[in-house]
Image 1 (cartoon, rainbow, N blue to C red):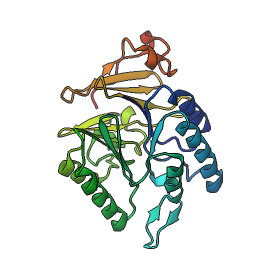
Image 2 (image 1 turned 180 degrees about the horizontal axis):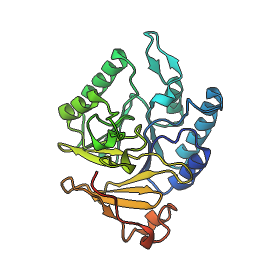
Image 3 (image 1 turned 30 degrees about the vertical axis):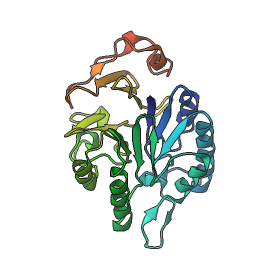
Image 4 (image 1 turned 120 degrees about the horizontal axis):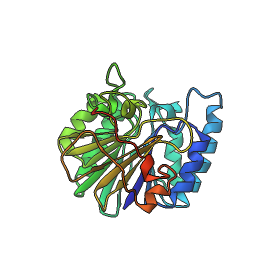
Length: 275
């Protein structure tokens, strides 16, 4: 199974266009939060309508998972905690979203909401407890914020990750956690697009402007993860211990070059120093 992972598109229509064009090549698209942009001049309600149309196009081509990020919160629940009401509505399109756990192939995916207070946080704990009772060997979480004190949450001066997530990872030991949120982590010294906490791989796509977006491709059958960004293309072996730096992609398969991220293998420059 091949999964295309994006996050933090922040209402970038060129990036959403690219995502729709690339999605049919994959068994699953994982959108790890922040589809919207609270800082945009475009009205939030209009953003939601447009993004839902893109999501419908995606869902017509492949399986889709979407979790909420901090930019996706559009109302408060009865307890005053911020939630993403609109994301719960995409379930009608067949898209797995906040609060869902589902089996695809030989993997169990658990989709966690952005939490803004103790009640939603407890719902995540309950969700993980329930999913753990039916976990498969490969259990993958989609959670917008990466864990605290990880290169995937390093912002250059401090970490911006989720402290609770570190505890949950150590408690449940999922196979992977897929995130975004901290845009610069993969591009700065001491940051990275990948990390490992005990046996759990952690990923953060990072963010760059322009088309196409920064993305990660998980080839779960081959146990490989590829990170594709402007001017950089790296991969890691998911069966090997954590190693830095990641290897440059020197001979990309045809399905990877077709993503319009690697036009010529010779353009894939070596990765930056260890982060």
